[in-house]
Image (tube, rainbow, N blue to C red; front, side, top):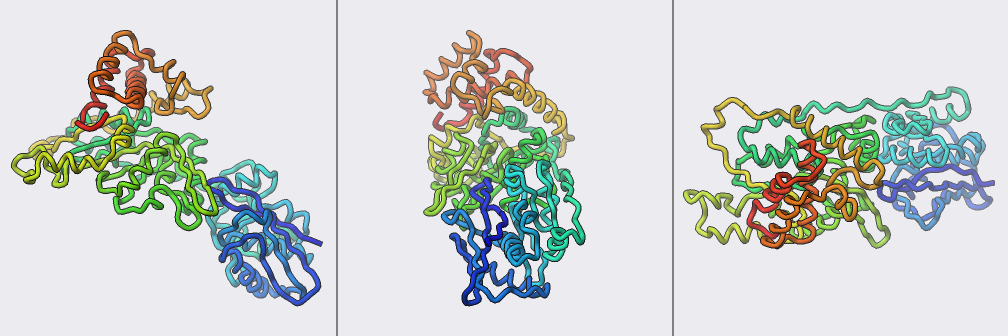
Length: 504
């Protein structure tokens, strides 16, 4: 008779239920795992055999066959150890079959029977809840999985504890959710002296999730400004925190089961590969753009990134998701992030300073920023020049607003957008609007429409640029508390669009 246990296989952020079937049949003693298993899964038989031996459990002298169904779904990872062990123990009648079949299990076994933490406990708990089963995972993963309140999570520290739980000798209490991680390293916008226009651009970007590009000489404060973006963004909602944490769970980034309500901030180096930025590699893991989902992706020295990587960003910026295509898998990850990019005006960085510029001025500026293609540049809603700050100003006391004051205005604008788009699936902020929705909420008054028409004709705005100006104008109106998009809102949005001498 076949004993069954259940586990999951990961396809992006989705966890698909896998049935682990174990059969004992007459024949030469052996232990075989079938069902399109990778090397780590195939090696599970040796870890399971050693763990059971450490518990003084002898395997019968029969042929042991474990099938992972569906057989055409690739199985990767060491988390198949625990469900294979449970199915085998149920087959030899040490564990009750009904209890094992009512469980989705994942966990890696050490040779002495301890359970080693694995990635993906949170999406696995979501899958278990959808199936109406409880989840069993290593103790170190229990606090993470318990955030899914729709299912019971049992988190033993070893295979021995799991056996005692199933047999009723020492039942385990359900795991409790981990603590909400508090962000203690937020940097204050008050530290920035001067740069009022760049501060305003960041506020607008945060309020409507608009992509922003800052161009300025080295040391003008571009990285400093970008690092303070998370401090003015509103906390993640419960749904957003769960979305983001599922991706971070697959990447093994959740700390001790805690879920953060602070929006993620990712700042990869410009030498990062395409797989690191977009996603891919072994197992088609999420890249930086997915790890920044619902948060901020900061690309410093934007022209230094490989051209192929930059061009691959174009579609995710529009759709909010990325498809990682491999020969044996097509994995879809969400990636709705706020892109903050920084660049020097030229290779030497001092294009506007005659005393320090190189001999190739102005060609060096055109060549350097020319590495950013027109279609990619077209996707930046806000473009701002960041001039150098005089050293005499650095000794003056800070006079600008702090992050708390700016964050309060951003939060009010976000609440307005949340209420406005409450009945519209897939639309959360102004940057998500398009088509009829954009026309309904962002059509300016007569003066604003006339100004935008003049600008579009004179400067050759693309259709995408035209719509992005409307979205930014809507956000500026929300920050001001205006129901209608008026001419001053359009004028400010246009001023950020035409700041740099680059393609519209």
